[in-house]
Amino acid sequence: MSVSKNWASADSDQAEPTIRVAVLDDLPRVQELDAEVFKDLAYPRFALRQLLDLHAPGWAVAERESELVGYSLIAPDFNRETAWLLALGVREDCRGQRIGWDLLKHSLDSLKSVDVKQVTLTVAPDNETAITLYKKAGFVMLGLQQDYYGPGEDRLLMQLHLGRHD
Ligand SMILES: CC(C)(COP(=O)(O)OP(=O)(O)OC[C@H]1O[C@@H](n2cnc3c(N)ncnc32)[C@H](O)[C@@H]1OP(=O)(O)O)[C@@H](O)C(=O)NCCC(=O)NCCS
Image (cartoon, protein in one colour):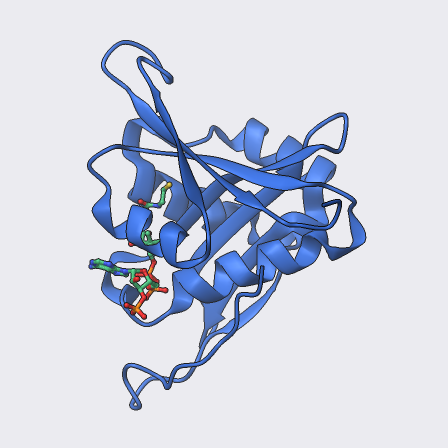
């Protein structure tokens, strides 16, 4: 699939954020934003640290004027068949500026050096914004898994085929 940047800045007064691979120093701010975005489903600090140690090249952050405004994490699974998009979040006041799109693209690009066939993710069934973004990037719906994150936390599974082995 191709995910390309084909848009103009939504707000020309604001500097375009830098999207880059995360480093250890970013972790406190990633944790803060993750907690802000995902509330009780946020990752604990120790999990973020270990995810960074395991999957550093798949971690992307968006930084604007030294402020962290978004992050994403993609991680290949053990047998290298599938990578999972484990996190994608943009600070509320910075949404709608294509930052989520750029982060997703950056994380997908990180898979170029990894021989996986598909990318899978979970998304809340009522999260229309994220579902629209993922469909636009080529993800298709696999189905609903009830209680995926515990009672009442159903999730849709979506998948993107990278088409490298067809
Ligand atoms: C989902 C999220 C990451 C999107 O980030 P964003 O920077 O606002 O998204 P973008 O500006 O890059 O938008 C990319 C595309 O997503 C879709 N989209 C974005 N905002 C949308 C909205 N409010 N309504 C519908 N579609 C929307 C559009 O298709 C958009 O492309 P377009 O602008 O060309 O139409 C952001 O809303 C967020 O952090 N949400 C809370 C956390 C979350 O739900 N994460 C995903 C969990 S699976």
